[in-house]
Image (tube, rainbow, N blue to C red):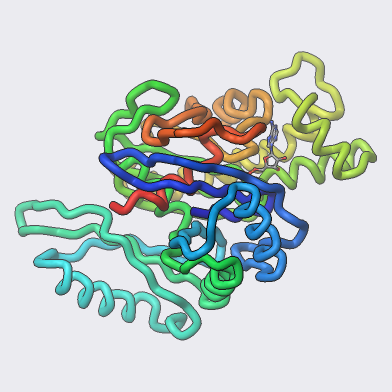
Length: 341
Ligand SMILES: Nc1ncnc2c1ncn2[C@@H]1O[C@H](COP(=O)(O)OP(=O)(O)OP(=O)(O)O)[C@@H](O)[C@H]1O
Ligand SMILES: [Mg+2]
C-alpha cells in the first residue's frame, strides 16, 4: 500500500483483519524532485523510487498494490439514494453520476464508495460518495505499478481512505473518539493539505488545497535569505509558533500558518453554512506539517477550536518498529486504504 507524497513515499505492507490493520513491514523514502504534481505521477521517477523502497524492504513483486491519491483535480460529490440491493445501487449511482458529471465524464474515471446504509421513515437509504478522478492521474499510477511489478489493485482517494479509520470506534492518542460526533480531519503535508469532515464515521465533505509545509520553507528561505535546505532545517529544528521572542523566523512561519488556518476556516465555514445542524465537535491534525512546533495550539487560537495532533491510532498494529523519523500518523492514509470496508 503506497501513499506517494511530494515529500515522502510511505509504504505499508500488511492486511486488514478483525478491525485492525496489521502491518508487517513499513518504510518511507524521500520523494525525488518533481515526483508528483497535484496527484499526477512522473512515472519514471516513481518507478525508480518505489523499486528502491521495495528492494530495501525485501518486498517481492506480484503483490496487489493499492495506492492513495490526492489532487485538487479530483471532484467529489456526496448524495443519498434509496437502497434495495448492491446491484440496483450500482445502476442508480451510474445514472446519478451521468446526471452530475455529464460534462466531465469523458476524461475521468468514476469511483464510488457506499458510506452507509440506514433506514428512515421512507425506507432504506444509501449514503454514497462519488469521486471523479482524471484519467491521466489514474494511468500514471497504473503504469507505475506495472513497472515496479505490482498488480494494480486499487487506487483510493486519500480522504476516502483516511476517513475509513473513523468508521468504527477508534482510539486516537489512547483516547476513544466519540462515534456519534462530527470530526474534522486535517492532513497537512508538503504541497497539499486536505480537510475532511466526517459525520458519525461517514465522510461528508472533503477539500484538497494546494498548500503545505513547502510554503513555510519558501517563506523562511525568502525572508531570511537562506537556501531551501537551510530553511527546511530551521523550520524543523528551531521554529516555534509560541516562542516568546518574535524572531524573524517566527514571523515568517506564522504568516504562512495564518494563511493555512484561514483556508481551514473557510472550508469549515462552508460546511457549517451548508446545513443548519452542521457543527464540528473535534478537529484532528496529521501529516508532516502537524509536527511543526506548537502549530496545533497556534491554529487552535485562530480557529477558536481545539486542535489535536494525531500521534497514534489504535487500529494500526505494527509488527515491526517504524523506520527512523517516521510516526504512526504518517501512515493514516495508507492504513485506511488497507481496510476493505
Ligand atoms: N518536525 C517537523 N517540523 C516541521 N515540519 C515538518 C516536520 N517534519 C516534517 N515536516 C514537514 O512536513 C512536510 C512533509 O509532510 P508529509 O510527509 O505529510 O508530506 P507528503 O505526504 O509527502 O506531501 P503531500 O501529501 O503534500 O504531497 C514537509 O514540508 C516537511 O518539511
Ligand atoms: Mg500526503
